Length: 500
Length: 66
Image (cartoon, rainbow over all chains, first blue to last red; front, top):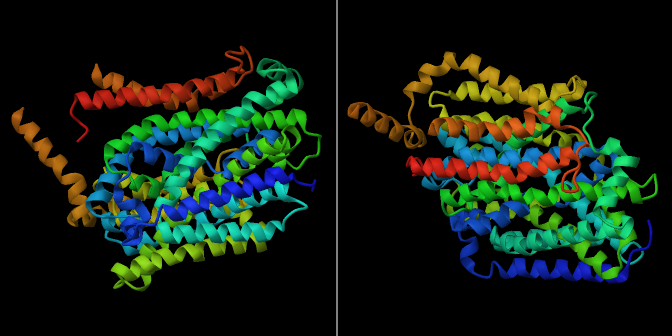
């Protein structure tokens, strides 16, 4: 590894430490950790703008920037699948998140698994969802970890022991998350989002000028020298069918992630969520630009550069110390802050839906709050352990994360609209979906379609085919969530009928 | 009429960003400095929020938002 730049390194470390400090200050009011609801979803008091920053901070991570540029570097326009994916994810969310938020708010729920438990009266289902959620989230936290590790490696080679600094920064994040709860990442998310926009725009304007004399000459050069980067292959293991199914399935999966759900539940009203669903697609303008940074890296960097370092090497070869430092700290923050939100999501699932629903149903109040907060150390500790000790073991889980997460979509979203969806069919569907996804992945029989798509199809079909077997029981059973979701509507319909 | 525009606004983003992709998967023409595929994706980053806004307004006018 090339020697780092001392100015860049000092700026990076200074900004990280400042943000950690703000994270602690955000929680100086004791109320932030007084209950699970306060600690994990901020007492549901966040307005539209804060939710925007939080969800933005959540979903646009170091991995987004490093991963997309390296995909663009090696596989060209396949990287653009992230655009329809996240645009459609927000669009779809407009139709179900407000409803989900209302149920969660009315029944004081803090996780998606909580909702499934109350909707279907099933602790089995809620703990299954929690297990899938935690299992898929830990590798995702590891990705953030490798993001900051790579960044510090480029910035600090020759000056610091990268592993020690990585571990220290994650311990600091775990501490402030434990201390401040969701308030920590929310306030720091504002700094991160502003830095992301400023730095990415700066890079997209300056890099084409520095290397090609402007944006249009750069595009001409890509068109002439590497046109294969600009279109999606028509066939092959990852062609257009893969692109379309991957975008669609990932869009359905986005708000099934525990950290995304945590962000959403902080909102103070259903309308704040609607407005966010409306405007969050605009965040993706940044993503298109990021993919172009990958193309620039392809043209500028010497052949044989490790694609994983495409963006970081591009920054290193193009800028002086100060700009390098700001760019590195942006990526480092994009790794630490989402990590904090993810840890909150995973801890919440673990404490509420694995520990309480499965192991110790009597736990509540202060003890449950303490266990939820304490889980942050376990989650981040596990991520550190796996990330540093068995980095290879996690690759499959990371690849399967989205395909696995989307399998809870019928249990969470379809159930908001389908009154007679039965518990049994939903559980079987979830298990079948997971099994099919893993089988397709392990045997490599995806036929050029995204693995999760096959799983989801199997999941849906099982539910539709099996539901009539259990529908009698589902019709007979009632509970407060079901009443809340479906009763009012029935009354309204009757009124309409009477009027007509 | 309202129902039709509602359905249209819901279906359009999916059509544009998934179904028609095989037909917009090309480099020419280059518009606003973006090759056509990238321009198309960029266009729908901007148009999708407008569709959502339209749906929001329609729902509001029907009183379906409480």
